[in-house]
Length: 455
Figure 1 (tube, rainbow, N blue to C red):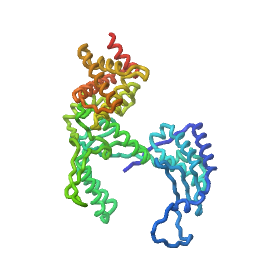
Figure 2: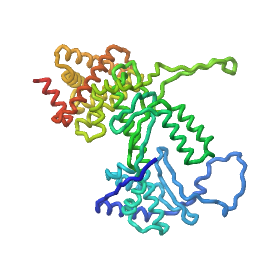
Figure 3: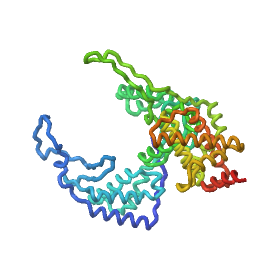
Figure 4: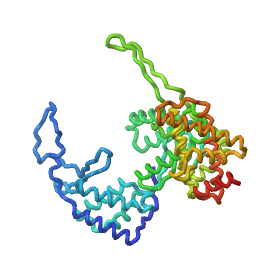
């Protein structure tokens, strides 16, 4: 449940002026809908029995909107004395432009979503049209939005993950979704809704127990309107669990796969087979493809993770970052994708894209030689070891070329494993380097490696 927030919305006078002008321009474009009832008739007839209804018996809905295949609203109307007034498809594009303009205000972007802005602006249209409001759009927004800004504690279940003891990573706290939480939630809901709801609530909570009890849940505090709070929670938790997978064995072993994602985002692959006799099946079998790996994160695990960058990454994702730190987090997010796929070619693509994004200066320089040299000089001080690293990286790129250009699967597991461990080690070194205040840009990071190479 959300608590009231204390968000004051501020806009400069020039910004207000632009918003108000565009708001009034759209207000003048509000037009009656031609024929809502006829428009919503089906294009084909069925054998459903029909009855005659007197037009005076028709109850009009208060408003309606039409969406495109992507789920975006393309026209919208409200009811005024049995007549629908609103914006058609062509004019609604201007409303989207106004919303995008307002969304450039970073303060607003952090607390409201575009869909919410759309609702509030259209509410202003309706109230003004009906003579129930007289304020400018900017004033209406700054008055209405704080009413919806609340503090929320949002929990998102994490699939195939178990937690021994709560821990915080970035802005997110991971803990067990245990029996006590579910019992308290059930009792409180019964208290609010009354004993008459017991049967239906029991069914719902039994499903919650079956799906989530004993599993991990990620909890985050967000201050925003409800829809935007959900968006922020999903984004922050997805980033946190993605970066947390850096410490999963699948980030160093290509034969392993992690299913630790937002619940429902990734499921183990299974295959089913039916044995038929005549027109009926006599046997059925379903089995998992590969091994289902549940990530059990103990207190001892967390202590081990802390030795290889856990606290550093946690601080980076919850605080202000410099250019190099941003580049590193982006690269780690790309690298995390290798841990959740069982396809070697997809793993290899994720790993190389991540490495190239941070070790290559731009598109104009050769990739393989620069990537191999920079990683070798970053992770090792021994010439023999550096040569070995360069060879492994170049040989792995040959595998990648076979896959990309000739469609051949990546099947040299030993080489791939060595390559993955080298890339993981390079990220470990970069995570520690991110604490060096002198290396605050991507350019300075590459210069640091060049200095090591030629010193």
